[in-house]
Length: 390
Image 1 (cartoon, helix red, strand yellow):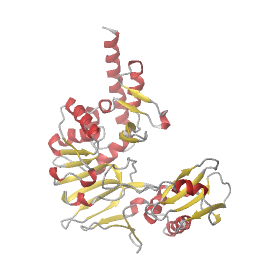
Image 2 (cartoon, one colour):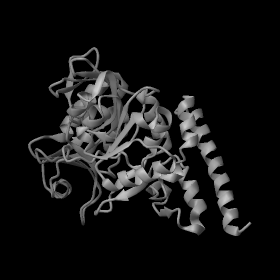
Image 3 (spheres, rainbow, N blue to C red):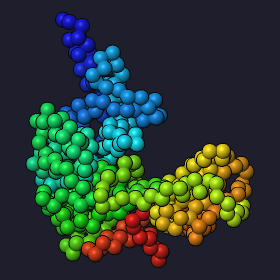
Image 4 (spheres, helix red, strand yellow):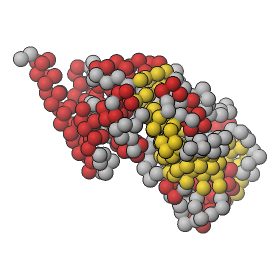
């Protein structure tokens, strides 16, 4: 037996062992509870869909490739980490596609409630792994998957062909769905959105469901909605949290305003003390309500040349901003604001509301979408209503 053959045999056994360990961990954590999905995870190997990738920063941020012989074992062990693997980058070296973390994929598949006999549209083909898992359980003829990136679709097709799986793959803007393959029993989005795309409602059979990660700039949560006969949809946010990359779409571009970030960290403005620090937005439940109350507002740490590190809120539409020093200590901090909106005042008001409502969680909220496109989030028992997009 040659050294190369022995290495292949050893890595094949290691892959089987690592996959078994991963599946057991997902099952123990309650994220992979259905035997049919467990079998799909066993038979649709993740390494095939991630031949090359860049690790997230928490795992070192370096690139690995199956073709790099001396590092193949490192590559294989990384594939079976419960982490998203970054696979495609744009011209700004920003990741645009990933092979989602196994726990996230398991959560989505089980939350979708997809079962034999269902026709499913997946929004966001990516590497093709989720389409492969769906095809294994439901049959290839029942699965359609679209992506705006032709490279994703072509590479996913090759990988699925290798396994004898042949779902319908298409290059399309997922925000518009894919009416040619409809109507569907389920639409599953493996990319985050700020609202439910109106086009999806007409592509799901009455009684069918839409599952999507509705996410603004602060936080996001899975939402599952059931489509009604009149073309409306109603549902609620789920306790499960995922973290998908934003949907790339010509129909849903985010507003950008060059220069607003630098203004936020250096421009003069009225200032005052505040007892609410940036750490408040690290509480997921509060962050969820904050983005409902402050749609379009962004939050992040920003540093400009010669300036300290600030936590800033910015709103491109009104060109408003607020900043607070990240390293400020003690209970009182100083916040500076500018523009027509007083963003930190709004954040404080929202925090007071959240406290008064006994700190509701995302799963306490319901979502309603009208056939005309209006999208409203409510909290049962109170009159407050919030509109999407986030």
